Length: 190
Length: 152
Image (tube, rainbow over all chains, first blue to last red):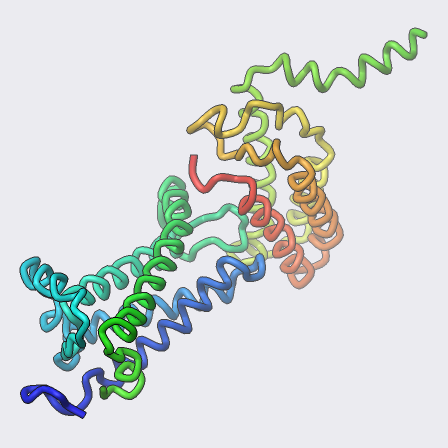
């Protein structure tokens, strides 16, 4: 399979990264769908949100202690490396990056940050309907609960846009650069 | 003839009252009205969630007060030109309330129905109270989703 001479062998994505990725797909889709179209009593949306919180927490921990391609220190790069990769991005050739590329790394950190903000805004929201009050809303001021509420919906739209960019990038790599990014996220290998 | 005049006047009163009140006073009345609903509902929800021990008498009193609130004539609380577009920073009532009064009235009708359910349920134990709180809270949410801005 390996085209390059110095390509590492074995799994590019370890099982923890893969399970967390697909668990996030399910939990996020559930949380988003229930938030937008679910029943007025949003108990299941809350559970989906707690699941997202757990996934994000585990991914951050794994980013500190996991294997190389999972670790933040291995893929978070400075502006020069990001600019250099971005310049090569339009090239009609596979990037052959082992793990996250420097531009993709921006997205990984960004989406984890926005997901964390979304979870927090949900936990502190009080929509004043007495049935869907965030479990931490009672510990903060009324103003804070309303600021959290005002954030929760715009952030859900931002996350949807981020998902679209993510899928768009995968299609771009597949069609334009001839690189399959989906299989490695399923099997671990490319 | 005289009787007819009185009847006409009586019918005209709400409209002229609305015009006679300042927008600021209208907002105070409207927000006070929802504050009262919130207070009564808060007492019921606290019992439903187990934050406060269930008390049939207190629950019935909250439900009765909600029923009383539903008998108020609230049209003048929603006088024209009192949306958040007219009075930014002071209210979360969106202009769509006035543009889609029929839809807004449907939400109000659902609220009325939920309060009626609550009147029959509140005093009959926690198992009766809980779904009634769910139904009532659902009507709060449905209206907030469509007609209330998320922030001032």
